[in-house]
Image 1 (spheres, rainbow over the protein chains, first blue to last red):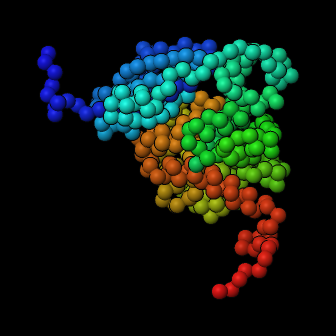
Image 2 (image 1 turned 90 degrees about the vertical axis):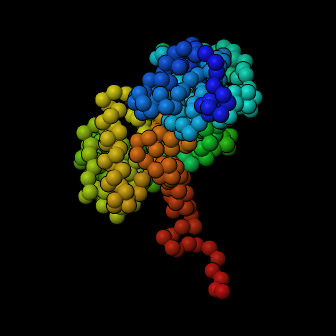
Length: 159
Length: 231
């Protein structure tokens, strides 16, 4: 179909979103989009989430940190924020979600707020609570593997 | 703005990790509501960009036990939080000026009414709006949590009782930025400013208590130091 003349096209805003998780999780665009729709639907119902028109555009995941662009209709940015805040897990993996910034175009959004890879991570053996454990280290952040999931720590906890 | 968090071993992330995350999430400080956690605050404060508040959360089964814990911890810690959740504990907390914050009054069996709201106002006990269930649960539990928050908010607004807001995160992943919490608050009937003010209240409480426990403080309005100049 012929696309709409410019003045009739819906106005949009693009949110740069950072998603953090434990290093063993595997995030992808599909599951995140599904969680976002669920979150919006549970918060506003079908009518409200159709209005907000939340769509996940790019999705870049590496080593426990994902960066993505979420599209929302102009005037519904705060609704989008609220829906994003209510995502506590993606496919069972707990996630931390933060909006880095909002822009009027995808390009401005990714140029200004998204920086690509979050840093190289490596495995290391550390002593935590008098116990030898493996940890995934990214910058000065340590995710220490335990019998029942990870514990978040930093360099400070091992000095 | 401050957020009150559970840190390792009460939560899944250490104080330093939560502090790093809180710094990036636009918070000025972190209140560590410790059940068992005893971090080395002196060392951490030197290394962290955000302020750390040495708080304790008392999780007692009944008012008698809570009363003992309040007496124990009040002189040692900068901020005292009591976890409510039963009518007896809620009642006990709002009637104790020594308690700073009544946490999760509507959790479990707990409920709130006009008598408690008035007592909270008169004794300066902050009532906590717990956004945790709104952010992290779904279905019926979430509906109940939201309607409980509405009831609590209406009472707190009507009687002008002091309040704090928290997402009760137990790991750095459960933190949310103030703007996000305000956006969620607006959806469930709060005012934007109201939510942000509830987050600032933690900082004000910490500053007040630090001043009170400092050596120059004798009683409210009385201070040791140089004479004030008359002008």
